[in-house]
Length: 515
Ligand code: CA
Ligand code: CA
Ligand code: CA
Ligand code: CA
Ligand code: CA
Ligand code: CA
Image 1: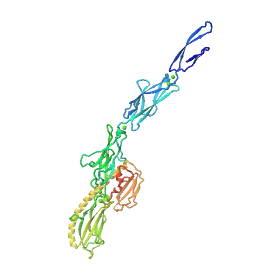
Image 2: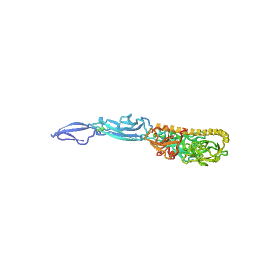
Image 3: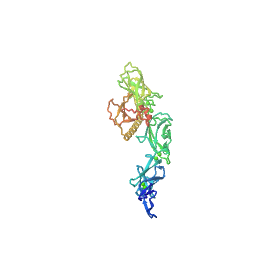
Image 4: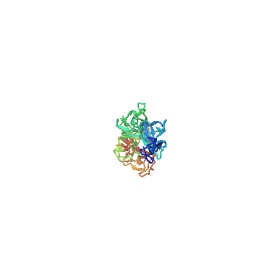
């Protein structure tokens, strides 16, 4: 390590000295003269090595769990590390820290320079599933030396999320189903997602069954894997207009979590009922009747009123009357809307005593259905007719009562559906504010006169405004949905897709007299 100059006595460093290997050296030095005999003297030189900071700290991982459960409590130990520095004093004094922003911290342990890495906050695998913890150890030398070590930690899943149904913007599902659906087919589908992974996110579905036998859910079947709902029967709008049920989505975690959702179904009308003639009806049940009127009546005399009923709703149940067959066109006129038959002029001597009128009653469905009634008008001398009219007015009163009763039922159903739709609409509007750059779409194939409907687009939704007749060009205030029904947009698939297949079916007709 050292060399000594023989003549001058200088001691020089020859090899590499290392404080960490040897802190001091002892040299025994002898000096001698050149006399005869030579005389000599001795001394001992002690050389102390001064430490320099030539060793960086060393970080050693003594134990490590690579995966940490996301439900670990703060303070859970995930690793033990030891940090050492071969230097002495300040050069060997170490400051350890975690460099990056992670929910972990270093904690000193029972022994100096041994640290534990512990969880600091709450972990959530659904937000961050993996962490790299960078630990840096720096000594206090001048200049300081440091080293870095990275721990890789995987966060393991815990079943802490329930399945979530995708039915925004509503809090429930809203489906429209055209009546007379094919039994056994899938009518709509629900879907829930789960933020967890694997088993904890494997969702299955079931319908909450009612207790009673007639519960509507007994006519529904659910594919537990994909959320498809099948109708086991064909629904009839005239029997059932709306129903709701609950669907539960459950994950396969242990323990499993579940959530449920309400499914609201509106059945939409199809024109599957032909008009039924309520008056006239003959004793054998056919729609035929005989009316007797005095020969001396003036033009405009009410001969009779044909009454009919249609079980469908809206256009499908809106009836128009027309004369299909009449012996003398100049004598009788029929009101298209009311079914009233009136004389057009006074009778003359040359007029026949008996006239046959065949009245066609047609609904306004897309494919319209019809029925016919036959009225035989007998023109009699004034005396006979007077007696006959007494009897007739008594029977007419009863007929009136029946018709009113049917009308009330129809009206009640229409109003209920209308109200429900408005409530749904309001709920939707409350949950989502829309851009009201509306675009009005005039119903193109509309030819009626009692009712007027206008479709318009507002944001992502289509609406149809239904109201009493108004002239084309009337002003509609965008954003005012007071008397609108919502039409799901054809472009958006999903929960309303079955409806959008038949958008022309969903109409509510009304006459100003009804509402
Ligand atoms: Ca050092
Ligand atoms: Ca050193
Ligand atoms: Ca889950
Ligand atoms: Ca989880
Ligand atoms: Ca129907
Ligand atoms: Ca009909």
